[in-house]
Length: 109
Image (cartoon, rainbow, N blue to C red):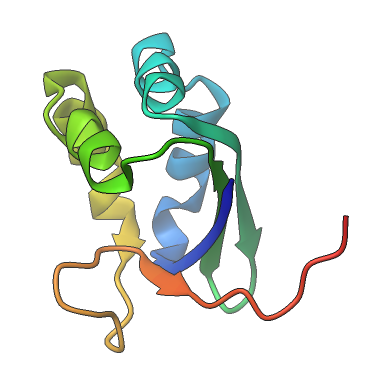
């Protein structure tokens, strides 16, 4: 299992919309994540800095293929079309990143 943390900004005027989207996350999105071996996925909001922190656990053996399977789904692109305008990628993100990956520096079970 691989633990993953990521961060992105959120537009303050879109926080209510973003919360509503995730309060009623589409079953097809959840099924796609599960099929891609993603478990224990959470997104946290930090105000007033307006940051979203995402955490998930990856339980597969081919991360690139599993992430591609998510990206290949038309429903994913419809979901991203709603969520992405709410988000503000960090200027420090890596090439090809929307959410910025984070290094795990401590974990306790």
